[in-house]
Length: 131
Image (cartoon, rainbow, N blue to C red; front, side, top):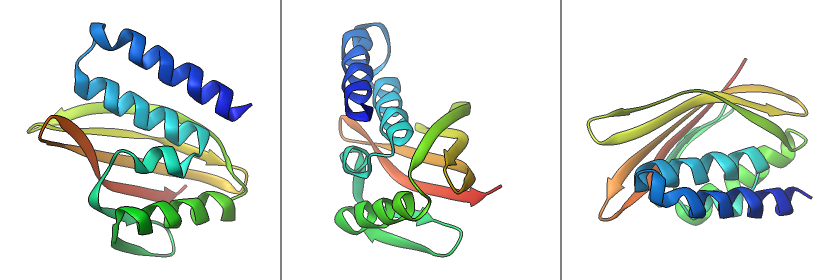
């Protein structure tokens, strides 16, 4: 069921991409992937190295390592229930999103940072702080 909603939301993002900037569409796709708890889909937006800060560890990971770290984080917290977007903005060409990731084991203040690389916005940093 989650996969169905993910596909629908991504399709809507593609349909409406003509009405928004490319940067906004990429960030929207990242938010959709986060809402579904899909680390594989999320990893498509990773830069070659990603900073991930979790309550128990923090490091700079390769794209494949970062995907595994997020899969473990989502699984260890009983899966993702939802993500509530609180704020989004732009600073010096970088986009960021702040929200609350709700899992079955708790809520996490989440901050995502994306930076323009060539013609794409790529995830540079993800922070999850337990509330």
